[in-house]
Length: 242
Image (cartoon, rainbow, N blue to C red):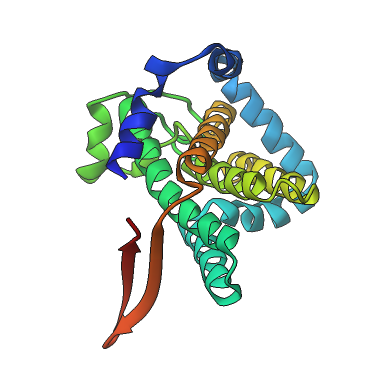
């Protein structure tokens, strides 16, 4: 885990031409969008106000980025692989669970560094408090004042979608469904008043990149995990095959 974290944080130092082709447009789009986020947010809310189905479906889709959903999907993949004795399913589950840790750490560091307000705070006023002001979220102030950028739900959803899409890309419908649902999660963060569009754009790019990295690095993992119980507590036993 530490090795992967080091590689992820130092990856800009090893950027190649193909990486720049991806990240330059992403960062440019994120920067430009950040200047117009308030107008874009207002447009989203106007559309939501005139289309009731958006408010009906948004709270459901946004669950695709919740920790419990991501962990459940990873766990189900792993358990189904154990039961059916299919290594690909087990690997997909393990990679998803490991990636959840990496995306969570990266998202939280990003939030602390930028300290951006959510749209739900101060009625849609966009403000960046930065670091160390963002530490006030741990001193009694509302976390929504400091934790908008980037979107953690979007990072989680896109990372999970990328892992599943990469592992099962031979089944054409899988990548389409995976990325479509991840896109829905990102857009729902805006309609749920929790993020700006620029938060979502960077979150999607980070999730996609981390997911690709983890599949490449951990596809042939030697870890085996056995869930179990100890009295009234859950336990997980892990073995590593040398």
